[in-house]
Image 1 (cartoon, rainbow, N blue to C red):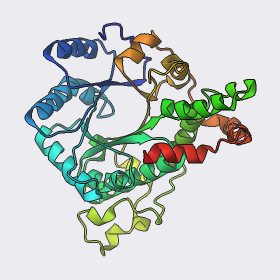
Image 2 (cartoon, rainbow, N blue to C red):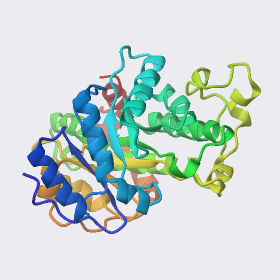
Image 3 (cartoon, rainbow, N blue to C red):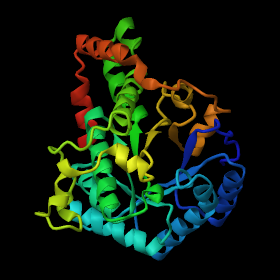
Image 4 (spheres, one colour):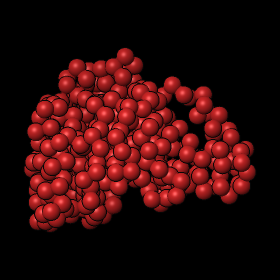
Amino acid sequence: MIATLARPVAGLSVWLQHLPATTADRDEIRQLAESGRFTDLSITGPGSTGPDAVDHARWACDLLRAGHRRSGGREGLVAAPVTALTSSTEGYVNAARALARAVDRPNLLAALPASDNGIAAIAPLLAEGIGVRTGPVFSAERYRRVARAQLRGLALAHRQGRDLAVLASAATFGVGGIDVEIDALLDRAGSHESKALRGLAGIAGARSAQRILAETFDPGIDPGIDPGIDPGIDLATAPANDPANDPATDPGWRILAAAGAQPPRLVWSQLYLGVPGHRSAHYLARLSAPGESVELCPAALAEAGPLRAGLRRLPEEHESDERLIGYLRWFGIHQEDVLQGLETA
């Protein structure tokens, strides 16, 4: 049952995570959408371009189409997983193309893993005008790669004259997944001091990712593209030796924003994992704010009750995050190793 979902904070984007629905479930989801209790949909389960999966993705896109138009393409998005014949970059690109052609809706995002090849597929897909959602991401450095690939893709799309205002992209950051792993190690340490650090690493990771989002997509900073990052440009439409394929020549974010591009969404995910001691309300109290995005399963929304605005600007607590990393090392926990393990699992 998902009838107990709470109305979200004004300006907060809420992605409802759900499996392909039965007719009864569709009626309930439709009622929730019409009452404004969520803004976007995340279809879970294995990806497919079979008739049933395509029909459901179309239904979901049509359900949220009014919100998509009303928000100028910022909300009303539907992320559907892709099924690649191979886990290569080319495999993901081809699978996303097939899904986009089959569903044929402007508010569809192809959901890709945040693997090396999944990240490399972001730029060529955006260059073709195909929206992409990537994740889950667990570390700031991997999110930086995703953000740079998103920026690169928007630059390629701009070169080809695409309407950037309706080209959406997003990334999910697995806040709760980080805490499950770190907290287990803190519990193993066995002291009151170690247990006092439980539930802090995920929020710290979210703050790091939000800093990268601000740095990459801030018109006042306008970092352009790091030529050391290669997010799959060999699959773009221009030849590999074309000067247009040199990331160092890409327009920076200031030019892309002036052309109508909107910053990609950073979606806080894995906020409800069914693990004792990990409660969605803990995260929502800190992550629910106008301009933010959260992904919740029905159980998480039911548990949380009415959502209230939390902290608006997460990046301001950088010093406390650095101290946390030092405290974890004191207990023999190297956060970078834990995050690497999550991202290679």
